[in-house]
Length: 178
Image (cartoon, rainbow, N blue to C red; front, side, top):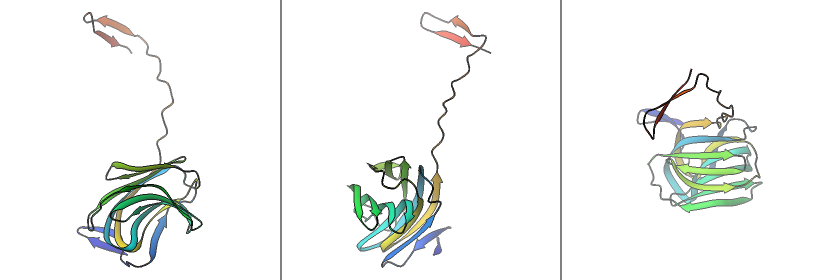
């Protein structure tokens, strides 16, 4: 559901029982990062807020599992769930946090509010879309931003012409060129 939260509209999963998620993007995406603003509203027994990446289908993806007391980076391979990394993390209900999930080759990283939290190396799933969702929890999601890595500048700079050097002191020179 899309609801108004203050002055903005947000995507909300309000049914606090069972699984619910929404996916977007392409299953051919490989290296990308995405940010999403998450606001946990309730987390029931065994419940969590989920931020998913490299989503191939309903049983193959990586995800961040936020329980309110821990954060885990996990993978689902045919309904076999594996914890790749975990850390204690206290997240209060009804507070917003920016979650970043990044994929660069086989390196997976998680940041919360700009602070690196988890990283892992895994090559099980090479590509996929992204998703947000909940399990036995409710929460809202906003400000989704998907970014691809920038292409590094590998072009050498041109050789300057008309280069001159003037001594300003015994420890300084002034360089100029056309």
